[in-house]
Amino acid sequence: MSKKVAFHNLGCKVNSYELEFVQQRFTENDFRIVPFDQKADIYVVNTCTVTNIADRKSRQMLHRAKTLNPDAIVVAMGCYVETSKAEAGKDLGIDVLIGNSDKGHAYEKIVEFLNNKENNRLLSVNDISETKEYDEFKLSFTTEHTRVHVKIQDGCNQFCSYCAIPLARGRVRSRKIEDIVSEIEGLCKNNYKEFVLTGIHLSSYGMENYNIEMSNENPVGYSEYENAKLIDAIEAVAKIKGVKRIRLGSLEPRIITEDFLKRLVATGKICPHFHLSLQSGSDSVLKRMNRRYSTDEFLEKTKLIREYFIHAGITTDVIAGFPGETNEEFTETREYMNKVDFYEAHIFKYSRRRGTLADKMDNQLTDKEKSVRSEILIKDANERSRKFREYYIGKRAEVLFEEIIIMGGEDYLIGYTREYVKVALKSGDEKLINEIRDVHIEGFINDEVMSAILC
Picture 1 (cartoon, helix red, strand yellow):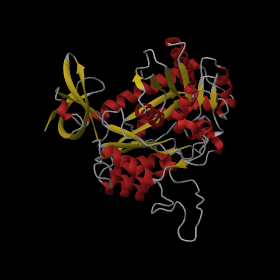
Picture 2 (cartoon, rainbow, N blue to C red):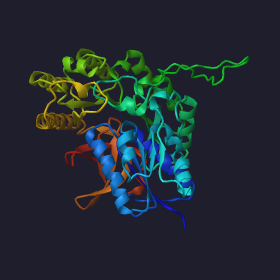
Picture 3 (tube, helix red, strand yellow):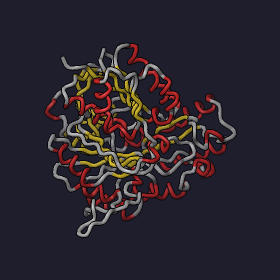
Picture 4 (spheres, rainbow, N blue to C red):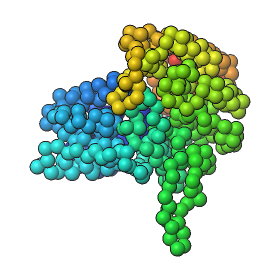
């Protein structure tokens, strides 16, 4: 009887993508995949370390796995393992520890441990800062409904003062465009239509220096995309037959230029939904964060986007209660967010991370102070989001339908517009799943979903 494996992911879409690859390898080799809350022979937890809460959740899920089956092999992978090697290494509830640089070989390492009865533990965590090459993953299928996240970049060189991600992910590494195209071509054969290009610091795609070894005839590793930047990768994906929509992961404001936007528009496939990381609307706080732009520059970039894309959905991240944040700086942030008029904002309370500059800064705010400020920003964000979506009432929109859910005892077909507005069609017609249709938006069903009828 085949062994049972359960998977659990914490954190970002890059983590999700990588864990899907690991799950795919187990599936290809006849392991039986079961839900994480069931008894399994192997539990794999892909961990996160972006906040203290993420660390805690990672530990909780690992301990939960051991509780579900004390005899199971418990595997911890990823960012928490990278940043807390000593702590994770002492946790006797973990049998296998795999760092980010070895995720691509996680299946082989776990099976090796499984087959070697003499092993007590397996520790596979290398110095991520020394990793220079992009670790190639390739999905042939995905558990996502219709929208596929495709990782094209890893690592970050920014070293924002609050962030531990460079410590967990290493320096910038980019995937070859040929490999990106090959993967998406394969996924298109399975009728996926929308692709989200994602990475740890997507705007840095192609920014690392490649050392190309030259032969007498051709450069080793040469391609027509040598020295490519993010826009080149986007254009290559847009040319693939079967790709109907392209979304982009989080971007830095400085990548937004006239040329970049003109080339995006020219593809005809970019969804006008842009996530630009702000973090604070106060220039003095941005400086302490080591963010490399001003609020004026950020605002100009959002205006530029709106010149090229009508009613673009611009979303962001903001940290509430950064060390030393005064009432005046908080008010600046609140007023600035309303000025930019974001569609959505993900608000995070500042979380101290070991090894970062911000962890050592004076005037750390209390959790109560951070909570109060976070709640205010979330309330503002919800009001702006509803106002943004009200614009579509009475208008026509293109929707990619994803799934059927039950609301109020009735079946609704759920999908998203190009701007990422969630829409519901009163229907249980499964034939419309993964279909792109024009709808007429009528109003709100609830705070998150708008009602529509087919045109």
